[in-house]
Each structure stands twice: as structure tokens, then as C-alpha cells.
Image (cartoon, rainbow, N blue to C red):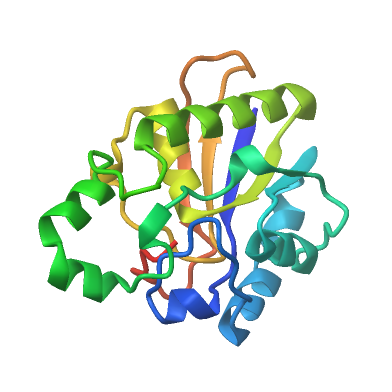
Length: 201
């Protein structure tokens, strides 16, 4: 049983290196192209079930890859970044470098934001439920942070060690069953033509 985690296409805020969290930003022209270019991968992977986060950028992406009626789940939303929502990565690094890097490592939570532990727990719960419902390979259109949380939960890879995921690509985890406590990493950044080091999820 495979969990196929596709990151949404690039957004206008990704271009500006702004942290998005629960806020929405439309896909850029490049993001729309990334989503459309992922369609052959979807056809080759043949998921048994498709789900997405309920945020606008993932709903736009899931429609572009051919599943506009796929269900959505708020548990698959990006990390709530609290008062850092909308902030530019470069500004945070200049103003609060230690806190920014601790946040990327999952050890610091901005004011009014969501802790890494709480985020990881809700993502894991959502994924587990959908794996049971899928009864086969599951494609989840989500966010960079969700993919990092899944890698931490299911393959033991902490967020500080995860290379940023390129928009419009997939990470694949292979489970022996929906109840398996851990998975094997089958693929990372699948579909990427030119790696994108954006971390403004």
C-alpha cells in the first residue's frame, strides 16, 4: 500500500518566499504548469483513492490533476504558523535567525502558531484514516510541511533533515498495510524537472 504525497503547485506566495500556513495564495502560472505536468505521473501511479487538504492551493491543484470532486480533510492542512503567517523567509532569517532555524527543526513555535508535535499528530491521524478508507494506494495533495510531518512520523526522518520538497512533485511512502507503524521511502521529489529550494510552505 503506497501513500503518494503530492505537494501543491507553486503559489504566488511561494514566489515571494512568504510563509502561507492556513492562509491561501493562488497558484502562479508556473504552479499551474507544474500541476498539469504531474498528470502523467498520476495516470502511471493509478491511486485507488484521492484526497486533499481543504486549503485553496491544494484544491486548485487537485482539480488541475483531474480530481475536482476529491474529498478534502482539514487535518491535512499546512502547519498553522501563527504570527509568522505572511512573513518573508529572508526577513525572519535576518531578524530572528536562531528562532527561524529552530522552527524549521520543529523545536520552536511562533506566537499563536501550532507546535510541531500537535501538527505531526493531526497529520498522522488524518493519513491513517484515509489509508484505511482507500483500500489501496492513496494520493494525498497536500503541503510541504505535511510531507515533512509524514516523513517524521512514518520513516523517522526529523524535519531538520528533510530537503525541501519541490512544488508539484510527489513523495511516496510504502506501507505493508494500513496498520503498519512505519513505512519505507519509495520516492522523493518525483516529477521534479528543476529542483526548487523554496521552503515558504
